[in-house]
Image (cartoon, rainbow, N blue to C red; front, side):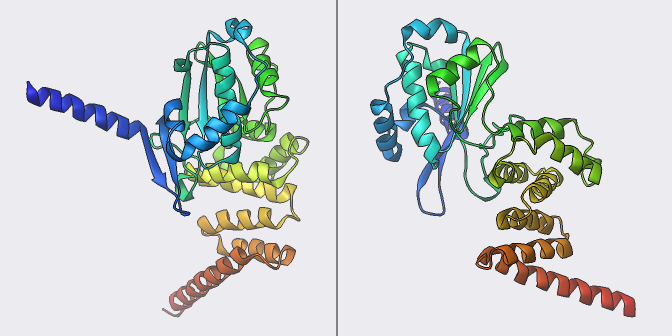
Amino acid sequence: MKSIFISIAYLMVSFQCMTQSSYIDKKGKAHLWGLTDIQSLKEGEYKEWFDKNYEEFETKLSTKDKDQFEDVEVKVFIGTWCGDTKYLLPRFIKAWDNMGLNQNQLEIVALHNEDELYKLGPDGETAGLNIHRVPTFIFERDGSEIGRIVERTVFDLATDMKSIVADGRYKQRYHAVTLMDAYLKEADLDSLGTYTALKEGYNKVYREVSTYGELNTYGYVLLSHKRIDEAEFIFKLNRYLFSYHPNARDSYGEVLMKNEKWEESKKEYLESIRLNPENDNAMKQLVILNEKLKAQKESNDEKAND
């Protein structure tokens, strides 16, 4: 019997470790990672910003609005490293609490912020959900999405939340990413390298996208999901939309380098440096690229002489 209790306890601890954990970033700061709860955000290094923004916020929502949300569940994707999360998440929880709603209607997942785990959870929580900014609040009714708030509100928190649950006509921020995510789901992936695909993508988003960062961040999220060819397409599209932005050129050069298109990558990095001579990253990548190209030439020369 004792062994059974030990096994159960072990499984409970293992489950908790699997769904909720933390990590230390490159700056030495601890962050939550995975399925979490509100209580965890009221403790340790998160307590100061959570309590401050919760207590200072005066919400327009109250118990009279409760009926509109009682059949709604919300998936909340956050980054405890993210300024927008620190600002908006406590305010959202304050609004939820003020309506007298059950916190069990909320599922909160903390995401990573570094390298190949960029904006991913430990157990594939973001798969298929197009999470490219945090915080993202996905409102669902009967298991189907009815709207989402992405990073920041469009109007104010109360107006955004009520608009989503009322009529479904709410249009979240970064609509260009929404359009491109839908396009990639339907596109023939073998055709993404064609001019036709590039033109189609351009026509879909050029009226919607306002800064290079909108699609650029989306491209890096695709990379973290190992969708490299799709990421290359997005970075290429962004390069055409913002051809004079050094970072758009730099990012396109990076994905070309990952796909071993070294000559093309070198051209993009050189253009990035021309647009921003202080781009140290591009300089470092060019050193690596020149070594790769040199080794490739030597290998080709050896084969030609055999």
